Picture 1 (cartoon, one colour):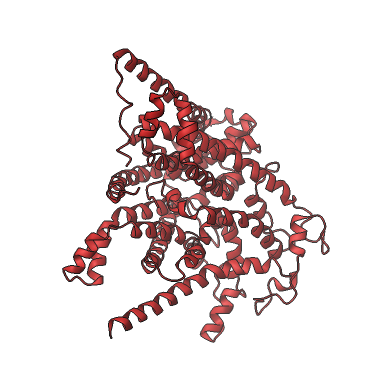
Picture 2 (cartoon, rainbow over the protein chains, first blue to last red):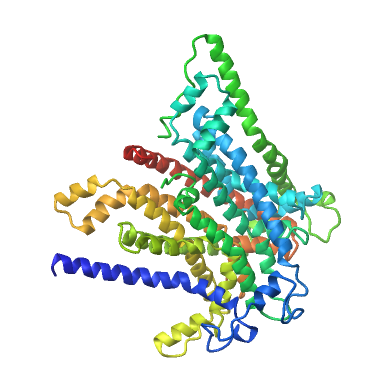
Length: 291
Length: 324
């Protein structure tokens, strides 16, 4: 084989493999979006319905609005409307993420410039994220019950704050480390206070990094399931928990409704995630891989 | 870069100013740490004590007030430590974590190797390949169920490719259930290994590779003897982070199987959850949590040692690159 033949063969091989994986990735997404537009007799049809013959908005209307034209009371009557869950999810994830990013980035500044936490302490911080939350969740729920924090927004915000802090500190620190110290030195010589330096020089310089950190943690908090499941009973149900309520109800499977809700939950995350895609590797690796 | 900015604050003229500087840094330190210490002190520390309390007092939901529970000494711990079900759960968790980590790693690394050099369509593939990571795990669980039930589309597709009826019982066979969750986990998190390996591969210095080429090494040699050693920090990072996350996997395992069929998917998180919220045996759940927590902390501290070492070499690499 000549060199150019070899190159062509490699190119064909590459596209073949990549396209196969593309199919693996896209098919489930296609299926769940497709199902969300299917009327109920197509949900479990055999042979499976790949492309709905009678697409409908009913699932969305039924799940997300009160104007369902079809089977209003058939499947969802016992369920909380997802808008309440959406509101809870929004409040909880925005609040805990904001707290984590604000306090975390200032802490990261202190670590980067004044080493207020040693390297060993910084790594110990990771324990908070790396030990599975299931090991503290039972005593946590009893403790919360005693404090009347069970089933409240505050309770979930506090625990999400704790689990987000390692990401917030590590990720923002990796951005702050990249800012040259000279700028701050100049400001210091001119008499700027430390807080002014943080808020008017450093944070604006790493603006895109702070936004990326914020959105990254938002994705994680938004999708969290275990803590939300255990620490909420009926009042502050979040979207992932709401979705799990569509399972195993006595009416049988309600795939179409579930799919309509699932699409609603996931869609914003995909938009956010694609928006910060250049920073995802950095986020998931606690800022250790920078790209 | 990180080292470069760890310099002490700028030198001061007078000694007095230096002390006041040090004082103000100390004040700053405690101020900045205070919200964190506050939350930890108010939530996490008491919770660990509550957990310890329940591990030594027998209590189930049915027994009145928990603060009046009967002291049981080490009995509950003995019970938990001799419980074969917990042993199996740990083994299952380790199997699940190892399998899904390796799966994610092999696929993600292979894709990254095929993709890290620019080619037409690279950006499009990249965007699609990271989608699973951005999907809520619980959504993946239910989507998996829609796809994998016995007369579902996955069996449909496999049937039409092979040409005969396939009815794999992804969701009801005890032999397959853990594998099914593992496949979902791999689908979910391959993007993570993929993006990190992409980042690692594309920030590799080119010189060693070129030198090896000049010396006449073939692609295979370059990969094994030049690129792979340079990638070691990134590879270890990916494996460790993925493994630890997989050890904690709960949403997919729980929402699809609740530990069943039989106890086929009873991983550690699921078993703790069952004990505490289905059997309402708070004490056993707490003692079990304690045992698992100690075990996990040992694993995590080991992992952190490795991470610390590898982070140094990563930082050196980015420094050498000069663009970090």
